[in-house]
Amino acid sequence: MSYIIGLRNFLLKVVYRVARPIIFLMDPEAAHYRFKRVGVLLGSNAFTKALTSLFFNYEHKSLNITVDGVKYRNPVGLSAGFDKDGELTSIYPSIGFGLAELGSFTGEVCPGNPGKRLFRMPKSKSILVWYGLNNQGAEKISARLKDVDFGSLRVGINAAKSNLTPEFNLQESIEDYTKTMDCFKDIGDYYTINISCPNTQDGEPFVNPEYLNALLTAVNEHRVEGRPIYVKLAADMELSEVDAIVDACVEHGMDGVVLTNLAKPKYNEEYVKEELPFHKGAMSGLPLNRISTSLFVMSIVAQEES
Image 1 (cartoon, rainbow, N blue to C red):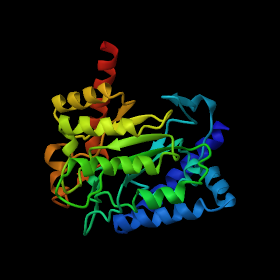
Image 2: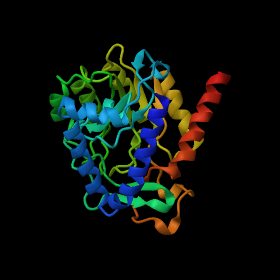
Image 3: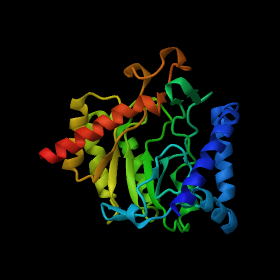
Image 4: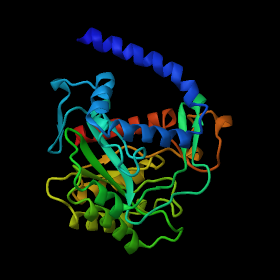
């Protein structure tokens, strides 16, 4: 069986190397949405799901893992940001994912930022993202997903604050988060509270300890029993800011943190400078790798020392 899997993976690698230059001829945001439509089609019936699984899926009991009481068939997950409206849950198990974090979802319908919003940086092995939390809003998306059977897929609900105005209002922002939590109270397996989107009009106000304490207090009031809550951290913070946020998460009984959101170019040295295509946005991929990995290692060391 391992030989067959190895041969399959080799053939897929060859196909990818042929297809990649063709895909790169497409506008990156257009490519994103076209492949989402392909995913919706593949997940629409049992035959295409089985065929997709034949090419991409892999099952082994050694991959089973339990985290915070949630049992995952494997630890391979899709992070928030790709499936912004939760449209692809039917196909994820067939392409090998054990979990998928949907969203970010906001309390209100959010069109995102105007203009071109996705840029390739191939020399830097990165994508510059300027989406701005575009999604259909928590009410519409939760109504569509409320009766969906996710099967073996574990689902995370990523909640963020609507990106509609540059003016920050603490109470309205908190209510935006909790509205999403309430809409999805019967959907999914865990929550992620996204306080770190780098592409919003009013910045990242919940880095402020006073605001964060108010938010996490409200989040706990809307907690669903048996469902972990994680807080997603920004990539571009001083260690003192990270420590303050982690301390607040511990104080309020959060189950963990997600490391990390995207990296802003002005705080980053790990990309090809002349390749930067736009003066706004934040980077995924290799420029983010060291930051997230370093924070992860530090968190493990701190846990062992405590």
